[in-house]
Image 1 (cartoon, rainbow, N blue to C red):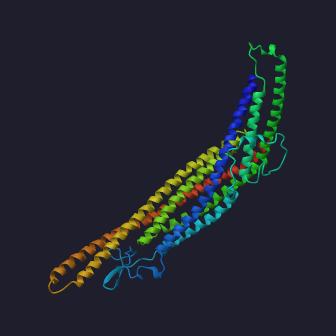
Image 2: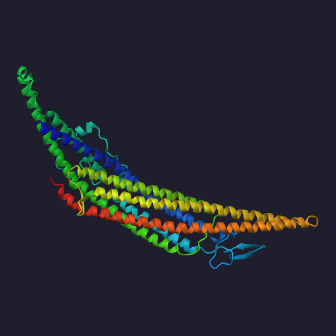
Image 3: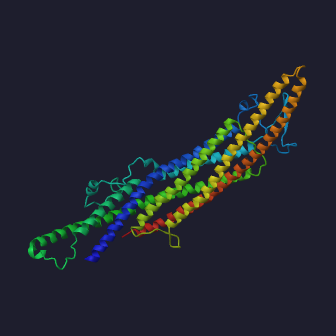
Length: 476
């Protein structure tokens, strides 16, 4: 009797764990669905930010500073004369001429299109993950009345809305209900089964008929509860075989396909940026509107990093909760011939995100440095314009009375302008270094993302291969 009670206690404990696993799976599924939409949308937002950056760096002829009568920025030139600049005459001033940056911008244009392709590709996995069903209430907490209202003599039905569904969330909810019901039935069995009597217990001598009636009632209750518990277990097994595993296979297939597509997109982006990296000069415009576009790009890159980390983490947690539920059904999922379970592989997948996030953070610093450098270069440009305006005013102030003093001031002002221009040239060279870091950093990010996506695809593909085996093993 005592060993039977211990066995029941273990079954109840195991049922409690499975119920907890399903509760987590329902909650994490809902969170993953929302994050899937957010992660997919962030690719479009990054593409839009890159487009804004390109547009500001490559304005139409009517929007150029020259067309507006403004001073054109200095530019570092290939095969330039001493000082790194090629100048042309504009009025009375030597105005540095900007070099064509079409190659750099064209590369960013291609990268932008691949982000948009990634956004479109993500819609397919969103369908397989049933993101359109996130409005359905997750049944992570069920009222006790609803649990008790489940029929003790449930019929063998298909994947209906009540007993399971083609929607993963409803299937998990149905499994959660049956686990809840099984838990209560097992507790009833434990209470109803006769316990070992103590030697000094003499109550049976005083009330023999009462004790007999209690035993009969207890045995009847125990048999009914056992029959119901067996039926509950059969329903859980059926739902697992007919509903859960097929849907799990579809979702794994969707995730594997998505990561495969992502690896291809990021590999192409890496090649594009690595090829541009070898080009010597790609000067950027540094006006306020250009800095605003760079700032927007930096913000979207930060959002991209946050979405990526959350997305991978929620994938791992969702699959982990389903895996533990299968484990607690004594049916572990095996990966390959190394007897390693998929939990280890999912943990390895999440640990690989550190390489990606480290590289993305490094690139964010590069973009932030570029933004700060744009501001410094723009400040120097404005200082040049301010001093040249003062020079023009001084020239108009020359008269016979103060001619000598004014000419001396003009010479000093010209010297100061040359020093400021030299500082501007230095800032431009620093900006050029930032641009090179931008190109290298973006390429490195895409390389890490391509490697990670390839690994994720391999892991999910292996899980799919072994699902049929698990499906067969679930038979009891």
